[in-house]
Length: 178
Image (cartoon, helix red, strand yellow):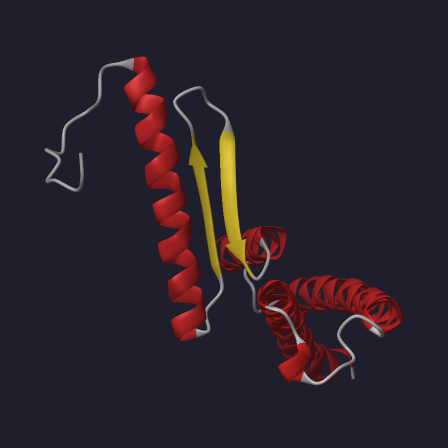
């Protein structure tokens, strides 16, 4: 059938609606991923299917983005309604930030430990298989190696983003907690 211009109107058929939703959802998530990669931004999206099933996408992680949004929304809410300039308000905010920072530090340490374990596992599991000159690889081994490198790069990028976020929060928190 190929590509063709689709008139923008609500789809009435239930099956067609579900197929359209699935295709468009994947396209939307792909574009969001590209935006996050190109601009080094954090992106979070939630969409509900025609059957009211939620789908979410987040880069680097939807939970982190949702938590950040929630915290910033609460902060702006408290700023508008409770006189943010009061010392007790400021102290409560500082405690929240310190608590969040401590949990992020714990998560970072756990991720570091997990990364070290994965690194050890990769070294032991792949030591013999990929430990030869590249000229001796078969085409299938090269394809497999390339796929593994892409997965590894994606994991490294996620960890890098988490570490950058943690580092920024740590600097801010250190200043607040003094």
